[in-house]
Length: 313
Image (cartoon, rainbow, N blue to C red; front, side, top):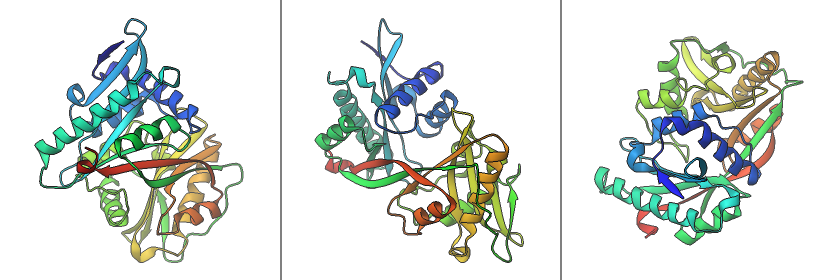
């Protein structure tokens, strides 16, 4: 076997690997090379030190990958991402990579913010029992569950926009307003981390997969009341809603449902038969029920395993 850091030329092979791992565990294989490369660029401070790819077959067959992210300034979540191809498991590769990831996370923590408690997190489909055993061994218990939901766009519901509000398609130049709205809407969210606007845009409206034609903003006058950002998938017949946010003054009036209904209708008109999203199963905003009313159903469940770095030694 041969190991080296990630390079942009590995993006397509990395997407293939992650899709195989996702499908094996019962998830939706939807990664593209462009999407993953964008995530690496946005979240991994230095791929030469914070990533490992493992190859077989003379260095041409990618069988495993591991990345350790660096939190934004003031943040505290370190994501341990990657995996081992199912037919190469049971040989200690995953254990070695996860040990390396945690060690690298500790080193980044010591260099960047030793006085702030950091949390190591890994997310995987609930059906990936091999990964669950590894996380348990290292002291990363289940911390959060996520429903991966999908809706058929054949008959999108017709839901009215609440009185006094209007919904419009995302336009170039809306990034500033959405950035501010996002931080207001998600400040109390379990997985939230404050990011500067440039890095936030790389993950959202500047991502290669961003689909502005499916994305919308809601206004009361000139004030943003809510927003929905959507993305393309590897399957052109599917789309993904990455962020849905309604600001506190306009919650519980049906705005989220109205925005989702509009996106479902637009997806249908652009030959996308399925729209997906991920939601915190313990969301305090009642998001799961909102999505179910619009037609979304649970396809699978993902799990975030997490622990403070000083608890994983």
